[in-house]
Amino acid sequence: MNPDPLADSGLDLTTLTLCDYANIREGMLNIVSSGVTRIALHSGFPSEVDSYIAMSVYVQPHRVGTAHHGRVIIRFPDTAEEIARIDFEFNVDADRHPGEGLFFPFALPLRGIGFPHAGQVDISVSLNDQPAGLVSFWLIDNSASQ
Image (cartoon, rainbow, N blue to C red; front, side, top):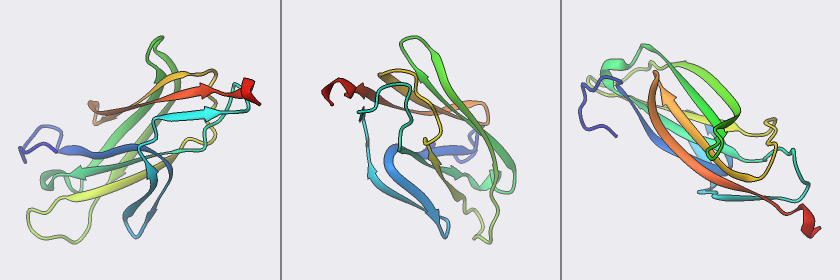
């Protein structure tokens, strides 16, 4: 989290993780089995991954009530081959105390995204066109062991 309350972006990515499951309930991010770094697939490629990207964005007080946008890019870092791009917009506003910021949770399922082959995968997040975070994992082809 940026300690400067008047920083240019006014947004802080406070949580970014790959997990088995995530959802949002009553404004709270629920994460199950976080910290996934390897996913073994037994069905070969191309294949889908049954995991979730869980993240939380802290919107600093001076940026609450303003529209924001973000982007998630999933790619193979060794070749820069883009697998998927997810653009999103959000605007947070709620009753709050003076000077209070707000957290905005996200749970993004990876189901439906086709991964063409095994290898290291990077998930990069930008908020308002500024780099915000990166998490990596490895896709492992275990189809030969079947």
